[in-house]
Length: 325
Image (cartoon, rainbow, N blue to C red):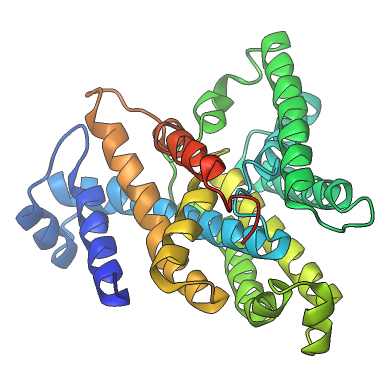
């Protein structure tokens, strides 16, 4: 799959995301509404409801995909993603804490809790997984992430059960959903996502050297400490921002970098480029499927990606080289 094909697939999914819903809009009407915004009828649905949701899906997909690619490259662990390493759970836990302790309900309020939670868990998992003489061991990182994610997920569940009224508005968010997300949710977080992408682009050349091992990376002139800091900050901004917008959506950061790696090989620069194109394709496709399967209701994106991602994870675990890149 070349970049042009990936762009075409993304463009088609963007159009379908605008056209498909509780009320399907013909593509010809979608195109006409895009060209002539009358503010009424189908044009209102397209511009005020579907386009914001589609752009949110695009941004969340890019953020989660790039965060997953960075974590896999830094830890040399093909099973790593923000969900499996507990980053999403950390962001969710601190958002839940903000809701329970401070009554926070707006995106401008809980985005900071999400970022802080993502940072704390990212650093904690890396420290635990790096303990010992061997450095950042892929198995230890995965186990540390799963353990912390399970503990924090259990605490969030307990908090919800103890005070269901306070968390009523969080139900869709906690399932990983972009339903009802618009410009008011995306725009406050967008600058942080853009900074995360820029940091990822800056760090990715050194990740090729780090993939060869720390000693060889140093001999090639890579600044390992600087690269790790850049990656941790980028993952915090991307995973924390995406979780603040849509809640914890798993498996996107796991699957898409693998697909990119199968297409382009181990070069992290190309993996990042393809991930930026393919990750929003997965999120938008999952969102479209979620709108169709139980009409007029909807499945949250997080549930659809989990249905797809769980079998993919099983396949990856069973592969002979699943423990390293």
